[in-house]
Length: 305
Image (cartoon, rainbow, N blue to C red; front, side, top):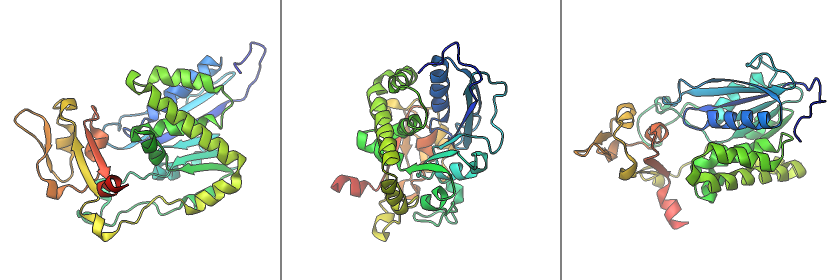
């Protein structure tokens, strides 16, 4: 329900959204801020996005209530911590209210290529080892899910952030129709349907987990942030696909590729010139501003599914 003029002294709600550049942290916080304004709340938003094109840490503070003075959330005062990447969620856990905060996280992990101990496929990665079960046992309320897989089932893995918006909506008392209205305004017109489906998928999942906590506990116990890779798949575990028509010759992927395996051809279109050096690190995919590059994990498995 929208806040009426007679509502006074509604306490401030703090939502902290964190992730990695290119995931949609700013889009999520913008949707939430506009939604709160629609309900009549005073809203303050603060964000850091200078690393968005570098794969670095990105975060956004959203605060709303009857009156909000400061745009930033103090440590230990976040009512909701929404993490689009697992390690970023752990990095910001000390901002979550210890007694009644809600932790929402995608279990996908985005590992910087320079976190590898060697440069071969299947290399040992330096990454947080905490499991969803271990983390959720130490927060008052929490949801952990593989939003990327859920989005892929709907047909677009890039809608994972909207899946998480759906989970977030189950933790806030705003009408579903208003969420959908704001989301539709903030995504490209061609993706409205898939994003609305992703939102509803995430929302329905969260509602089911709230109604059936034992199911959530069982799912969390079996949920992993790392998937073991059979040796026979290491050499063919990823495939880099380029949509030439979408490439705008910006050269960002070529410049930032840690293996120097990309180049521009005679038409100034990106090509995988050294396929034997590609490790499937996904840096090119994350940094491409035109979505011209996709890194398909385990393509053999997807083809046989």
